[in-house]
Structure formats: structure tokens, C-alpha cells
Image 1 (tube, rainbow, N blue to C red):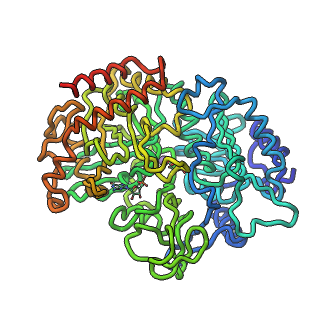
Image 2 (image 1 turned 180 degrees about the vertical axis):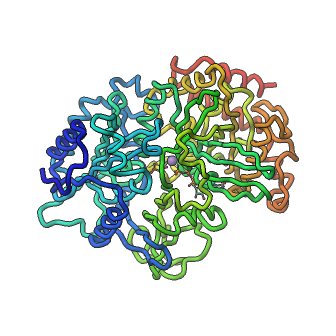
Length: 607
Ligand code: GTP
Ligand code: SPV
Ligand code: MN
């Protein structure tokens, strides 16, 4: 096999693994990524030349590209995501289990010759600061330069990672192909390469810690450091090693007196993590800074604090709905050096999407590449799951601690989802076990972050990890309970939040975004044993005056506030039956402590 550059490592196992895959996939040549700016720029130029990317107007969006994916390749594909554990029970009732031997046979068939006419890129990457003892190294081989460029923003890539890996360090092997070989002389001709849906496989081998992805070039299906490694493979590593890998944002919250707390939040995909992590408080004197917007790895330190690190180096954020009003810090983060996928293009070479905060400046080219006349054309100009890939370094409120290998000590966990009814704005758990109960029962409307025919329907998404926990979820609940039993642990307080309550006519009851700082204030106070609360059947809820409404009294009336902060007993009784149905799936793997919490909640609601 032709090497396009010098092999930069003496790691015999790594080199053998790369060569073995090259002889199966049959690329034109092998290229080892060094992670330099020059390499990134060269790849970007090549993709512009081959018409896979459009370079945006440098005066409006310096150093930024737009990609349009195939209409079948716009989000994670849960139906094509497989957990190839040794047996079905190990994967549990929430995963698509598949026999690992069978799957490897099928996929080897697909990989055979799949990179013909393409370069095989080798991406050495670190999740977490390079060389830190919590970081994990992965090596992704891919035939997609789009994946390389995105990985260079989202993770730490290149020679420095190989230096830490040395001659025999451990790495998670990640194989990726778009599954679209090119015949001699053929080119992509500006068309996003991918395989048809029934040939897409996002496969995980939890016992051998391997990732094999085929047929999709998009986001969580293809940037294998993110969901596949930092959540799915990490979920089993965390279970075995006594730590936590969670689908959580991490934020630093400073009150007007300068006192700091760190808050993490698990919300399902496209339910507000990026927005909360970057919010600008509407409460005077408060400050939020970003540590991470999607994934938290947490371990106990010697004093018993759970410390969180963000394993990523960038943001793969939802574009629609992001504006200077809703999330100015995200807008600045993607104002340059950004890869946009499936947003609309303006006539002057800038991007546009629904909810960007201003009318389109004229005609657009929509995410499918067609002319789009605002107000006239059908459908949306940007795909609802259009994304920006932006560097953490370009975020104006990135916390100074964000790359600290020690991590930040977590004071509070938030759980939540999109719930148009029943779930109040915020309440606090009565205990750790009750908090784990809350996390294990999170429900949310399915969003466009996943290709699904259930979009808009409420489904259970425990700890926002339904698509990411690769082992039996009953055991994952047990792992959470065990974290709470660690001797000397100074455990975070647990809260449930819901920014998405709606009125009967479909209006959001709560303004959300920067005004979520009003809820963060109450969370902050409760962590210090302050903050006015009523003990209710579901947990501690703010009193009617405990949430500061100064400045939004007109928007949120007394009646709205009451609706946001009462226990809807009838709604909760329906909720109970949904929780029972959900829990029944786990059979005897459901920890007794959680069944006990369910019984106690039912008894309290019956009073
Ligand atoms: P993933 O990257 O998919 O894991 O999503 P995420 O949890 O980071 O979601 P994100 O913050 O990108 O928000 C997704 C969508 O929800 C965007 O369109 C936001 O505008 C919208 N959103 C976020 N926060 C709020 C809020 O407080 N209220 C309302 N109404 N919408 C919100
Ligand atoms: C999610 O779906 O939770 C995301 C986007 O963060 S993706 O990386 O595509 O999974
Ligand atoms: Mn996510």
C-alpha cells in the first residue's frame, strides 16, 4: 500500500492495524494526519476544489466552509446503530444488539474495497487534554476529509498525540468509511458521499473497545471520538473503572459576590445543553462561563469531590434557533474558523438559518442546494439539525479552567428534557437515590438530532443516555446508585428542569435562554442550603417568589409562574404509568432502590 507521507510512529501494533485495514479497504494511499493548521487549510482547499465544500465570504465568515449532506445523511441514525456485545443481555433492552461475529463478517464484506479511489486518512486524536491522565487516545481511520477537518476542530489531533502514545500505548481503534468507492477517473462531483440507509452501520464492540462505522459521513455517526468513543465506549470503561461518562454540559456559575459553583446538565440531543453552557444571565451581576457543551467525564478526587472534564475541543452545535438574542456566545464562536453543515447560503456568501434572528437578506440556496425564496418556497431553508463545528478557543466565555486536567468540582447536576406538560420548571431531589430515580425516568420529545419517525413524541431518555449507554441500562442505574455510596463523597445536589412547558395554544410558558439564569440562581442558593422551597410530593420546588422575575413580569405572569411551579397531580399519575412501563423493560436488572423510589412517589401523590 502506498504511503502518501512518512509513517510518524514506531507503534508496531498501530502500524499493523492501519496496514491491515488498508489492505481490506484498498484506498489509493495512506495519509497520517499531523494536526497542523497547514494540513487543515490544505484539506479545506481540496474540498472546495472538488466542490464538496463552499468557501464562505471571508469578510463575513473568515476561514469557514459550508457543506450540504445527502438528504439521507442528516443526523444520527439510531436504527442503524448497533451494540455488538457478546450477548444480548449485556447490551440490555435499550440497545440494538447484534452478534459480533456475524456483524464483523457482514461489515468486512462492506469494507472490502470501500475506499477505492480515495485516500485513507489516519487521525491520532486525544479526548481530553493531550497527556493528561484522564485523556483517552483514539485512532480513527477514515476516507472522508470532511471527517478529518471536523475532528481537527472537535478533538486534539496529530503528532503530539502519537508522542504520548509512544511505541506501545493503548488506543481505541475507530474505523470509518463513507462507503462510496470511486471508479477509476470518477470523482464525487460535488455530491456528498455516503451509502444507502440499509448499508449504514454504526457499530460498537464494547468488550474489545472497538468502533466500526460505515456508510454515513454525518456528525455522531462519523466523528468517532464524540458519541462513539467519549460516550459509548467510555460508558463501559467508566462502569469498570468507577467513573462516569455522561451526555452533559459543564458550566461555571459565578454569583454577584464572586462565589463560584460548577453545574453540569444532562438533556437529550437538541434540548438545550449548548445554550445553557453559554448563556448570558439576564440577572445582573451573575456570570456563566463554558467548560463543555455536550460530554462530561467525571471522577472522584482525593477530597471526595466529583471532578468533571470536557473531553472535546470544540462545539458541534445546532444552528437553527441560534441567534444574537438566544445565544450570542455561540454566534461569536461560529463567526469564523467554522464548518457549517446543512445551513442555507446567502447571495453574499454567508450562512442563514431559521431562528437566526433576522430575515434572510434575499434569495437563498437551501440545504438541499436548491434556490429558496423566503416567504415563497416550501419547507425550511436550513435542515432542523443543521450544525456548526466551532473551536472552543473562539468561544468568548470559555472558562479558564476548561482544559485543566484536574477537572472542575461539580456542585449540581441538572436533568431535563422537552416536556410540554406536567414537568415543572424546576425541582430538587430529596436524596441521591431520589435524584437517580429522576435521572432514570427523564422523558423528552424526540428532536431532529436523530433520524426517526417519532420526532415530537415523548420518549424515555434516562440521563439523556438512551442512545449512548452501550451496556444494560439496569446496570447503568446501579452504577449511578453506587457512585452515591462512595465513602466520603461530597455529592452534587440533583435538580430536574424543564424550559419547554407550553400553554394549551402552544406558547412556551418560560422565556428560556438567558432567563434560565433565574433558575440557576435558585440552584446555586439550594447548594448552599438557601433558596426558598416548598416540600412537595415530587421534591422541593421554589416558592412563588423564590425565582427572581424582575424584568420579565410582563412576559411571565403570576398565573404562568403558578402553572410552572405546581404539582399537576393528574399529569403525574399519567407519568407514573409511563414510568412503570419504562421500568418494566429492565425486569430484575432494575435496582430495588429505584422501584422503592417509584413506590414512594406513588404513595406521596396518592395523599
Ligand atoms: P446536542 O448537540 O444535540 O446534544 O444538543 P444540545 O442539548 O446542546 O441542544 P442546543 O443547546 O443546541 O439546543 C437545541 C435547540 O433548542 C435550539 O434550537 C435552541 O434554540 C433550543 N433551546 C435551547 N435552550 C432553550 C430554551 O431555554 N428554551 C427554548 N424554548 N428553546 C431552547
Ligand atoms: C447529539 O445528537 O446528541 C449530538 C449531535 O450532540 S451528534 O454529534 O450528531 O450526535
Ligand atoms: Mn449531544
